[in-house]
Length: 287
Image 1 (cartoon, rainbow, N blue to C red):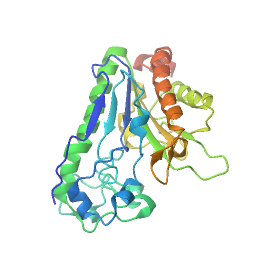
Image 2: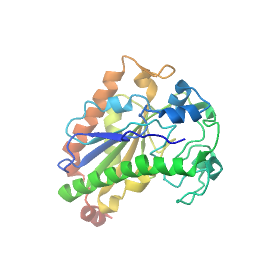
Image 3: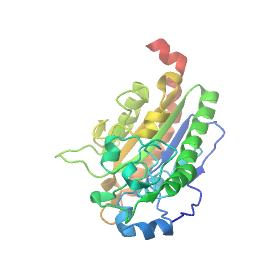
Image 4: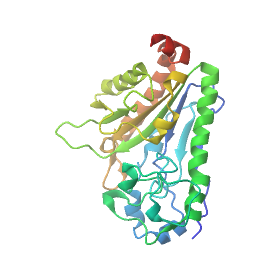
């Protein structure tokens, strides 16, 4: 099987570094190549349960700022994993990258997921090394290369850059679970003042906010976040029931309000981040 891949993502907004902010939606893609669907034991509806459905559309009100939107479904390739987070049992043949067995890989949630939602096995057969490498080369590497380019341009112009990686989550367990989880890799991917500003924004919207629990950020925040160098990466997880019927993946009346909060967050960060001292020199002096 050879998957014919369309371009893996789109970028809207200005890409010349004029804004210090970049936003991304890596898990809302809904394109699934026909050859992949033929090799899957699951229906399209079951595969789509792995998506962060409609998160890309929640960012439609963000203007000017570059916004990356993935096109391919997360069950096909997970952009929020390292390219070597691969289960070798899934692969038929040797790969150029050496598989790295993490807890996520063991759970079937590597860069090439083995399972979709509810832990359902995706594949009828093993994925060839050629297929795996083709997906990494066509989708994963260009996505992170583009993020790096945008952040580098922003930092060169402003002295710092901010990446907001946008996701949705199932409602966490508990009586009063968080509705928004802000992840900064336990302080490793962004300045505390920036994270606190983001939390305050969502609390003022009336939502319950948690930091790093149960989501501290994935590969994207870990790889791109370098606060001592002036690059700050924050993952945002939004309770998907705030904006859609999660069982049918259909928006409801709450969608516009959540979209307005995401646009408001972008405006807040553009207005307030110059005051936070996010550049490398200021941060090092503060510590």
